[in-house]
Image 1 (cartoon, rainbow, N blue to C red):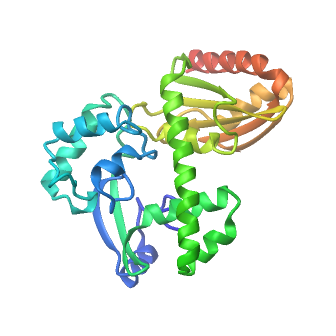
Image 2 (cartoon, one colour):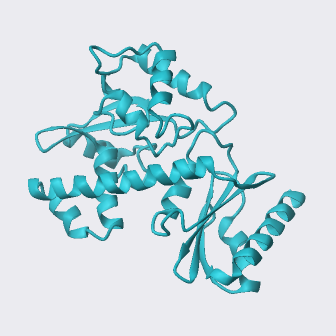
Length: 291
């Protein structure tokens, strides 16, 4: 829960006591999960953080590891948590060089390893697996998994694999498609190419990518029958108030707005698609002028 709610960066007294009671192993490293999986696989299927040219690209991963001087042993790479301090530094440097000028804040942090089902597991992976089951409407599977049921674990892993494949495919599509870009903003109109149920998650992943500078406004759109789901995210922690921004755009054309200053969304009629994008760009450009 601590990892899932992003509290792991500031471990207070209570969380510290929980970690000691749980006999959790904490190690500093690249926040690619699961840290227990061979490094090449973990990087290839990494979606949060999304690493341009690496996530979803086997060739990109092999090139990265070669540049970082991290060789395999008879075809098998070490797991992330097995890397020495020197090897971890090499990996961090290699990734940073591929995302120069971007936001590095979410790239390095604490790796948490806990004993679950009688083996070491990455807490971030466990949290993501539970979240995937819930998002795919399999809450009962998530509960059974948390209770240690092996049958539910297998079901949860199948659901999670499908969920991650959908996310990686969506991120790859976004990296290759045309985007509407302006001064400190990027609009991605996925239409029916990405499911509306994951567009918010995808937007969040992009906002955490080291490719983008802090303060960049990311707005992603996906069709939902006769509606369009819009998700807005802020790269980093400082920038414009996204809830207020969307409210200014949506009120004149009609729609529902919700969210927070750095993560907001709205639902609009599909027939308002072009009007919404036009008004959104006007407001974004106006905000830049005011700044």
